[in-house]
Image (tube, rainbow over all chains, first blue to last red; front, side):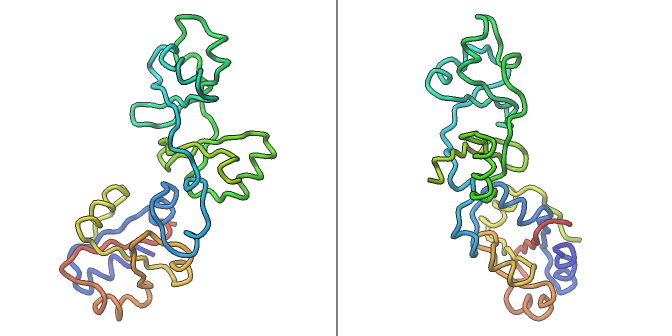
Length: 152
Length: 68
C-alpha cells in the first residue's frame, strides 16, 4: 500500500517522498515509540530489563567470569550487539582456564521481538518452564531480558 | 521516483529533521497502533486530504504494515 501512496503523492506534486518499506511491523518489532490503543497494553519489550550482562564472542571465558558470578546468564554478542549465544554459571565451573567464550557458549538462544504480546508469551514460558527470554530487534540485536516476574 | 527507506534509524532522523510521517492504512489499523507522531491519511483519501493536510515543500514519509 505504501509504494502506491508514495507514487500518488509524487503525482500530486510532492517532490520529496520516502517509502518506509518495512513499515509499522519493523518499527514495533524494534520496540520504538507507538501510539494508539495497543500502547495501553505493554509488550515484552516494554517490560524487559535493559540491564543485561553481555560479553563479546571473541574473548576468553574469563572475561565473563564476574558477570557469571553475579547473574544467571551472560549474553554473548557480536560487535554490533547481535545475540549469538548465552553463558550460564555452570559453564564457568565446567570449563578449563584457557576456555574461550566462543567454544563454551550455548549458541542460538531463543529470542522474541519487542512487540511480542505478554500474556501468550508468559503462557509459553510457563509451559517450557523458563524464567527469562531475550528480546531482540528485527536484526537480532539485543534489546533486553524479559523475565516472568516483570509481568507479575 | 520516491526513495525507498529500509533503515528505521534513517526514518527517525528524517522525522527529527521535520519530515511528515503518514500511515496510509485504514483508520481502524491506525487507531489500533501507529508509529508515535504519525498522522493518518488512508490511501483512498490521499487525493483529497494530502494537498490539504500536508506541506508539499517538506519531506513526506509514508508507511503501511510492511511490504506484503
